[in-house]
Length: 336
Image (tube, rainbow, N blue to C red; front, side, top):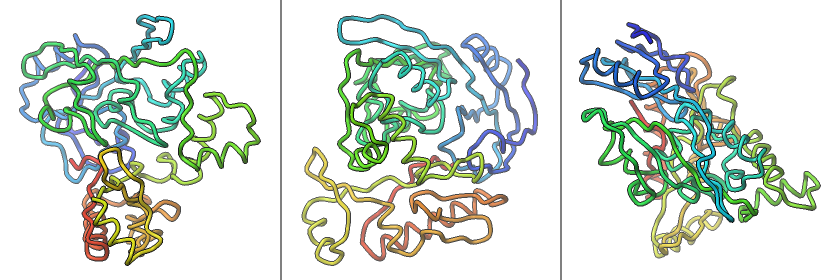
């Protein structure tokens, strides 16, 4: 374990933004994390996982703690479920495939989401009708000030759409160490999103399995989303906004093709990608900052864009959507 100085964070974020950290250190376990904190008095601490949901707009005047805690362990099981714990530093998609190879069902709709396990509950990651909260059991997290480990239950995490307590009142206070999920022994497939069924039909699938659904989801994602190894990006940059039914009805009168899906609470979730595309941003490029040609929700770095350039583009997109539709978008990506 070594604390490095003046380190570029370009290799550690999927946008490929070249900012620098005053100090940088990787840790593999709680003891190493405690030692780092003991030997470094910087007030500013940033915990970094896979770097797949961050946009750096300036250098980090503090210490960046890179979470590399690994390990996957079957904790317990009963007639219906297995309880599987994974270190926060495990790659998310590799973990998903690990569970599917053992016929533990539930995470197939969340295949190929970039990032590490520790970010999954922080963001309450979701895709194709599933969210991490649907399978969450508990997690352990290290309090940066008290230097103690705390357990968090489902209720403790206060999950909502792309949100958790770790992004609100406990932001920057904890380091997630591991996550335990409760997965099904018997399949309870979720193919409610039409795109999954369409892809399964194209694949010629006649008998559903979790592995086939996973493959269908990965095919869809690869067809729409750029590979961060080739084009810098952080996946969906914006959240899908929700409006009340009356507002949606008014929008429907003005824009008959608008896409909306009813939420459980009675509001209507709009497709942010559609709104952005209607404002003419899909495929837009200014220098090396752009909006992807296949998915308007994804902002990209074609090579040497700065975080500020990506951020400024996102601000223009927000303003144009609000002007055209009267709808306020929110960034899903954490701006640092």
